[in-house]
Length: 273
Ligand SMILES: Cc1cc2nc3c(=O)[nH]c(=O)nc-3n(C[C@H](O)[C@H](O)[C@H](O)COP(=O)(O)OP(=O)(O)OC[C@H]3O[C@@H](n4cnc5c(N)ncnc54)[C@H](O)[C@@H]3O)c2cc1C
Ligand code: FES
View 1 (cartoon, helix red, strand yellow):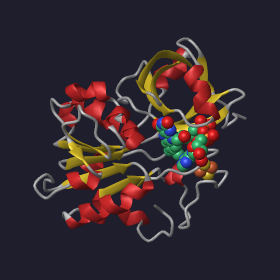
View 2 (cartoon, rainbow, N blue to C red):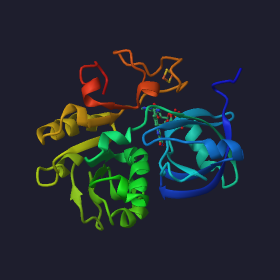
View 3 (tube, rainbow, N blue to C red):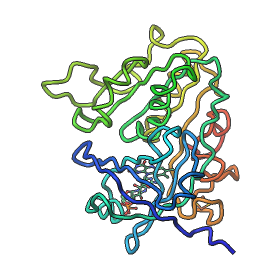
């Protein structure tokens, strides 16, 4: 019987330091046959492991249409991510997945898309942004609303000029420096009736504290509960609906039924957000 926890080997083919606490890893699955059949959707995640240092969930952050490699952006936190930060190009890691429901592209057919991110929350949304850059015909209008603690911590800064060609980027930071020319304040400041178009679907990824205020603002601006999606974070172990670590009070598991839920689905779930 196949071990559901058994990782497959992936090689680190590139590492970029994006901020003092964040690195972008480009991974390639070693086995040609597995690599050729490996597929993921926007919003899905995988479990990454380093022997002796444990495993943890990470979101894909490159376009699913790029087949040879995929990328993950990692914030340095505890033992696993600190070990990852020591690894060099050519080293191997274990991966299993993809897991989670992912985002159904049909939900945004003929709709404008609002991506609201806080901190490292921009990372999983980059799958959509890269996809829209490579295949603009698949999307209508896309607007990014992104907030971070300070300019140094903004994720994927080098990508913004490329994204700007067909995507509107709105930025804010809590604390500016002398180079900062955009908004200073919380991400909800950026969401105004002048900015938000009709017929929108919004996807929110960030710290839970951001969700309450952003949802409230989007509802005020006319979005329905069904058109607001949030990505929930939980301490996950198995990623496959067995261990119950990520169970919600309503019986859903974040790892298999989520991590993306519409606000309509979870608004009445205690401690859902
Ligand atoms: C679906 C999903 C997708 C994720 N995607 C990414 C990603 O793309 N990039 C990334 O850098 N991280 C991501 N994470 C978070 C990542 O899995 C954790 O940071 C991981 O635990 C780090 O492992 P570690 O051993 O280095 O740190 P640990 O020793 O596990 O923890 C270090 C610190 O982080 C806190 N922590 C760890 N996990 C969580 C959590 N889920 N919620 C709140 N606090 C937590 C701990 O309490 C501790 O303070 C994701 C998590 C989930 C659930
Ligand atoms: S992580 Fe084990 S059930 Fe979700």
